[in-house]
Length: 304
Image 1 (tube, rainbow, N blue to C red):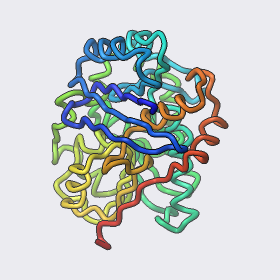
Image 2: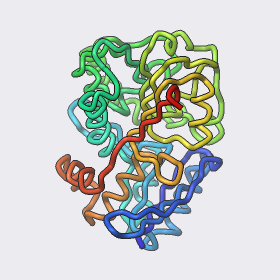
Image 3: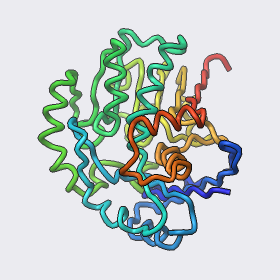
């Protein structure tokens, strides 16, 4: 049996453990949250190093990737990257850049969601650049929410060209900031300011991106909205239904009632290819996504 462990800087309240069959072999998937404690995450990784097949890291990116695909290491993540000496480690960025792009086109090709002219709020395009590109290529009206969700500045970016320029300038600086400034970690993942930026939610047909960003300022009604995200628990699904969401799409599958993060899918790919993370190419990800039969989870609340 393969063992995949996702060590997350996020809340331990979201921990989960499931067994699934992949390519005829049992995989035990475990998510361990450290409630914002990076030192605890490092300790867990060191303790399990060599005892598991692959680590995924959640709640923090190990790298930020600019428009040029140059990797900028998050300063706080360096000790995490260096913690394991035997077991490979990844953060899900390769899956974001392949699987999530494919999912948007899958929704179009299978007439699941009409995309043309839809107003799409992408919470953080820095984190999901290829997904953002897929929306643009499908003639959506995209509002890029990085300034809102990462920095709390009430402003969206409407032109991808402007965003690319800003990304080139600021990514080297952002990578040196404490990650908790940019992303909710630990108990912050349970906090919500319903009113602060609700107009941006109200003006969108589709809200896409990391669920913790979506939840950060989520208003008390999401009537008729389409949510495209990844890491949701059964409790999250119930919450979205109660808020009036029309359709939920998770780019990662439903395993044991839970859609795990992209870092888990990437760790599974790593464990099956037995390559170094830095050596994985786009073709490797696409090959394994097809081989593993990774399909999005689609929940239509209005039909239930």
